[in-house]
Length: 487
Image (cartoon, rainbow, N blue to C red; front, side, top):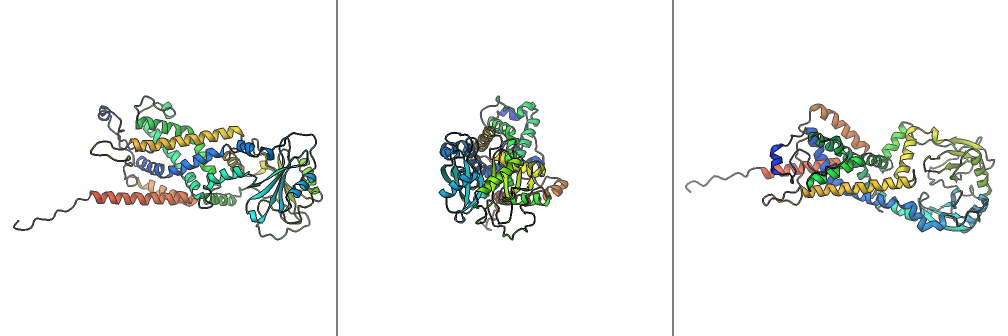
């Protein structure tokens, strides 16, 4: 996936005899346009990709980092026999944390501690999680968490997502995800075209040509073949990253709603009890005061969930309003995932509604699985290793791209320049009418669906027009004034 000029110009390090023997091939208008777009996007968007790759690489180690930093809270010192009742554990957590309302309880099993999550208005989206040893009923500690993430994981997540700049910082990651797919696809097309033009073996699409002399040709080989190997993974990261970005993610969610392909809602209405009025402002399953204060209800609800077939790690969320059912959800995100949910009457233990992952719309299933894989938790350590390899590979591709820009700079005494020149202009003017008729609406639609792609593409276009006008003005001959009469 080269950011160099693939218009057919000979490489600076090519021998003079080779340049004479094999003249350059005139690129098609489409290739010229794609080359120039790939060049500008590679130069201007690559810094965002570089930051995303570095922060994403750091995020891949969060499960191991959590064990090092918070192992005493997350795991029990010794696995005992029969666990204490949830009522006993919730009572211990409430004694250690008397403030706030209980948002959820995740029963511990094996070497995992029980997590009792408290919501407090002053914490905003964050919460306090109290960890309880399920075998002894003793509190092992408490942390400020965000959607269940520990402070270290939350810090690295924010670094990757928004550079700790809040909503403004989210623009950087959306720009990176919005352009990554086009850089990948465009790079693969340009590399295939170059190898096809030189009648290279198909294997050279996947293996760099080590016979090439040191210089831009060899760097291009490593840059392009590494990009080809990473293409599927990078496309996956681009698509899944966009699904929860600020603007493109909102459009994606609206599209799922329009197609009725989003995550199904679980009804928590109890028979004979009308649903209470709600302003929709509850977050993280916040329970209304008083609805989650009966510790015995947690054992009742958990027993019903186990009887209904919800095995493995589960999370109990008390009702957000009185008179509603509680929710029990499987939270096993490793493959094969367990994401079934039921609604349970906390008084009688009756299951009032159910939503199984197998019954979700296909797009909702793929979106959920894609997010888990993007976060590195779908396949456990294998998922982490694959993400780390993608991040390292993307770093190499970006560095090799900038190195080619440096290697292509003119070095002759009369043509010195600090960096390589961009590919030739004029690709759009050479396109046939039908390509413009089809391409313009498609580009506008992409710009609407991916707003940051549209805005930056428009910026590239304006910069390119300005540079073209400036170059034309420099080439314009200066009129010579006639000599005065009689001189």
